[in-house]
Length: 165
Length: 196
Image 1 (cartoon, chains in turn green, brown):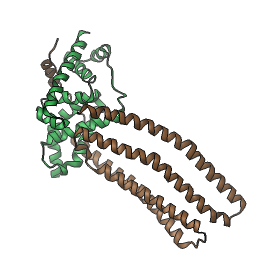
Image 2 (tube, rainbow over the protein chains, first blue to last red):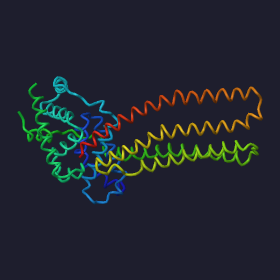
Image 3 (cartoon, helix red, strand yellow):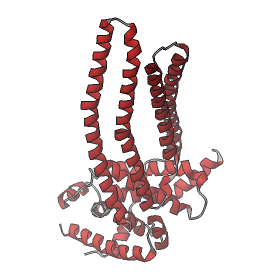
Image 4 (cartoon, rainbow over the protein chains, first blue to last red):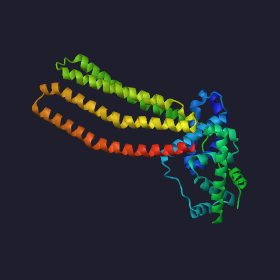
């Protein structure tokens, strides 16, 4: 393994799971999430030499992932944007454990948010520091805090609506 | 009833992860890079060969009509335009524009899509007109040297072909492209506004 591949391996192992969750949260589709993850890390590999350490590498990777997700949306035209009804969510969850059911319900709720909300909230739940999220999203810290407050409320309401069924 | 912290607990309890590893990505990159380079190189080499043939034909054949020289000049310009366009698009695509802020990224994407749209519709229209004019001028000398049947067949084929392209295929294509780009730009605008 050459040095660049070694660096890439370390970067992939340190970040891929969170980036996968971001992509999954954005698409609510496992295959699409894997495709987006692959596309993101292809760009990381391609541009690794150009990374200038002006920001953290994870911020840089998240930025690429966010832009890749936004571009994916354009390609797909949200044809797969699922308006998951509670019944569908229920039928999908029947075969899985309670914990997994809760996770799929959470993903279904995230899928109902606006595009930027989906990306921001998955980063919040993965405990990415707020200044880093603001840098990734290219918005001010204050603006981000307002948005996060609103998204948290929206997501909690959506989830509790699901739980009623 | 759950609060947001409970949702975070659910989120963090998930064990699912990506189904691909770093090796897969490196292999994929090497393969797709080669494929892309081969595809692009073939396009450029083919056009360069066409350009070379036209230039050799122009230099070696003693054309007597000035219209033929004008037509060959038009063909050369069309070939050069195609080559320049391919190189320009490749340079844009190679630029690491995916590391900008989402808002700027979307703006760049919109700009690129608009440029591609212009290339595929308006510029393609002028390209077709130029090629048509080139053929028409070339045929003046060509027709002076061939019999009536060849003239008739050449004219019929060219007229039918250009009529089909201009009045049918191109119109359908432009209509479809217009619809797609409008939808895409609207989508991108909507997303861009979310990052204000």
